[in-house]
Length: 177
Image 1 (cartoon, rainbow, N blue to C red):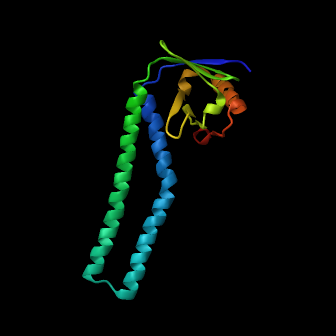
Image 2: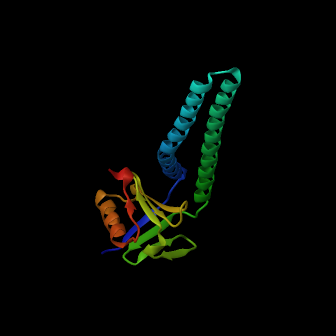
């Protein structure tokens, strides 16, 4: 297989788009557990009300539980958004442009001052969306490869095949359908 070379000059809009997709995925993944939690609370309250009857005290407890669940979710969402903003700042401080060379041996990243070689087994997860390839080196840190830097669909397909042939983890193609 041939080596694929890509010059990537990402900007803040790229990172915001990528991180917004991650936020949507996290919300989507956690929506079921949140719905289950809220349903459990409501059913518990209704069962209690049916056996005891509503009193002013019971209504206060019910409202506190509902408000508490809402506040907890807002705090978690806010912390996640804050984390995303700090990740955007961190990625934007990376020296650019970066020339990536993808080969059967691994990935080479070259900037004006550094050269980094990574074997394929370094990547913990690889994800493909409609607009990007994301090569994860840890749970939250990834190398973004926006597809707009791959000038043709043929180059996107070649990079996908090269990744599939060499990564030891699964390629997540959720956004590519």
